[in-house]
Length: 286
Image (cartoon, rainbow, N blue to C red):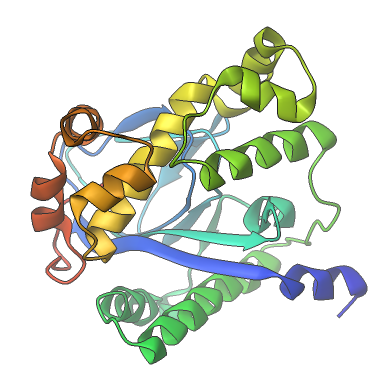
């Protein structure tokens, strides 16, 4: 491998949030979202449309979609032939950068019938419900297998890796997002975030929204919700501890905030989506 390829693996971080096999209903739709995690959708039945960075894709069985973190996208059905899919929300980073963005991968590949990925998805989902060290390591190894399979399929379709990384504005925005992620337990202000880039707060708001689709403090709220969902689903931490880790001082305020974004209060969400109890046929998550 070349030097840049070695650098790619020198500080690799892998984290699985959640996933499942889902029969999606009419309510499976969301528009103009930009998530702090990456997504994989492996369509097994039905048809849909995905709009990724303004490009429209007709999703049909055999297509594997990869939506890197912080990529604006929409998804919805186009008729009553609702899709069934394996899906996974995860993070793959090298240092401060989202690795999948820097690879310049296509947004979908076609999986040959003889190389179906059902078993790999199923194993990752099953391992995620185990709490031992070996399962965590196997889970991460299988995520790498899945991503490497994606790259191999893309190479067969003419893809060549882009190792040049992000443009300067993208690096700046990702640096701000990393700061947000590491300070979710504290109050975060626009002035504070703008100060990281040494620019005026009003200009920073416009810059951030032009890249991420939402104002910076809205994005902070989204990160807090995703952190809270992950902790509720994958740990036994008390709600009061999760409240503190996501920047709240009162349970009532945290519960109102959480229910506004998810439709559940924190305890209802944990009971419904806890990884120890979540069956493969669980309902779609955003």
